[in-house]
Each structure stands twice: as structure tokens, then as C-alpha cells.
Amino acid sequence: MAVRVEKCPACKVLHKKCKGADCLMLLIHKTFTGNYLTKWMAERNTDQERRDLITTLAWEASQRKLHPISGSHGAYMVVAGQKEALVNHNNILKNEKAVLQLITQQLEAQVNEQNN
Ligand SMILES: [Zn+2]
Image 1 (spheres, protein in one colour):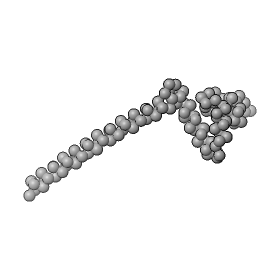
Image 2 (cartoon, helix red, strand yellow; image 1 turned 60 degrees about the vertical axis):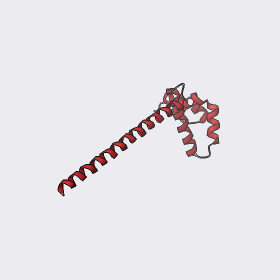
Image 3 (tube, rainbow, N blue to C red; image 1 turned 120 degrees about the horizontal axis):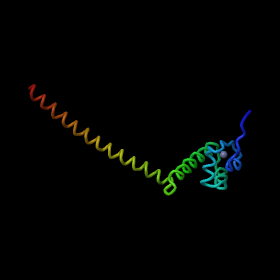
Image 4 (spheres, helix red, strand yellow; image 1 turned 90 degrees about the vertical axis):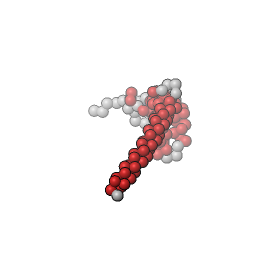
């Protein structure tokens, strides 16, 4: 016999299946309120656009839960900082590669001089 899960307010409004306490729609609903969610869903033309909207809102809601003050901007700043560190590291590696290539050329020139 199937266990009946009580629908969260968001799923009741959207007439969707609900996962109860773990419902993604509940997190979105708490963050954006059901009225906006219903309006935004109605403004989407295709199922793919509605799925994209839910994915985006779920990410935004989860980031607001993780970073109550900075929200998704805080998450963006973390990623931007990681990108800057990777760009700097990549530049260091490029410089080391150039130095190694120069040393290799000098060693090859020395070997050629010794062989001649
Ligand atoms: Zn739900």
C-alpha cells in the first residue's frame, strides 16, 4: 500500500506531486512565495522553459539558504575567486613552461657545441 505524502503549499498551488519535507518546490516557495512562482511558471511557454525556471529558482533558493546575506552573489563571488586563482596558477605554469623551454634550448645548444 502506498504511503500518502501530505503536499506542501507550493505543490498544492502548482498541482504537482510532492516529496514532503524534502520537496524542492517547498524551498522555492519559501524563498519566492507561491504567487510569484505561479506567475513565472505561467509566463513560460514550454515544459523545458518551466524546468529551466525551476532549476534556476532551486539553485537561487539553495544559495540564499546557504548564504542568507549575500545569496547567489556570495556563491558567484566564491566561484569568481576560484576562477581568478586558477587563472593566476595557469599564468605561473605558462611562465615555468617558458623557462623550461629556454633551459632545454640552452642545454641542446651546449650538447651540439660539444659534439662539433
Ligand atoms: Zn511539495
